[in-house]
Image (cartoon, rainbow, N blue to C red; front, side):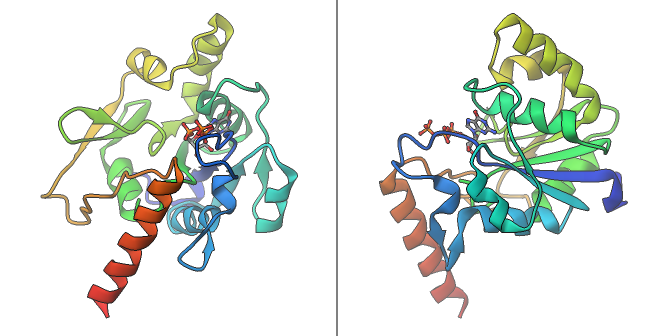
Length: 205
Ligand SMILES: Nc1nc2c(ncn2[C@@H]2O[C@H](COP(=O)(O)OP(=O)(O)OP(=O)(O)O)[C@@H](O)[C@H]2O)c(=O)[nH]1
């Protein structure tokens, strides 16, 4: 595992349209701060340089460099590609702004399992992959460029070509939380997550 934080960059993906939510997800308050700040704090624990993958200048207020997409309107693959281009490190961690229950420990586990693979991706609940909460080597850039050139914008498809370490997450994982990969796409999702975090805090106090 690359123990040196200096060899790891982190990127919060927040360049989407948030059309199902109806307002920019990264800026929505969650447990007293915007969702994007939760994700930045998670990545700050693991990576030396943490940046925001965004297309709106409003994100420059968060004291982290903003990486705009160099290819627009192709979804998260455009964000990952743009960030890998910008990255100066071998290992690159990605975390969407709308998955507030992913802990830093997930990325430590992924880095422990990446070995010689181009990337490490969590797999849970059978065979559900989370390619946006994952670690990519800078060398993946070439394959993403090829896929974008061909008009193939599905991150899953690029992963199938790259090959990856599939890291199983289940009840036996020490930091397991059944909502770990829950993502907030709609207002009901958002309210459900707010309710969950309030109850969790009450249980812990
Ligand atoms: N940089 C970048 N990130 C994106 C892009 N599209 C989606 N994302 C991010 O990828 C993650 C998952 O995105 P989705 O929830 O599938 O899409 P979304 O555009 O945010 O929301 P919808 O419009 O409701 O589909 C979120 O963190 C988004 O901010 C994009 O084109 N560029």
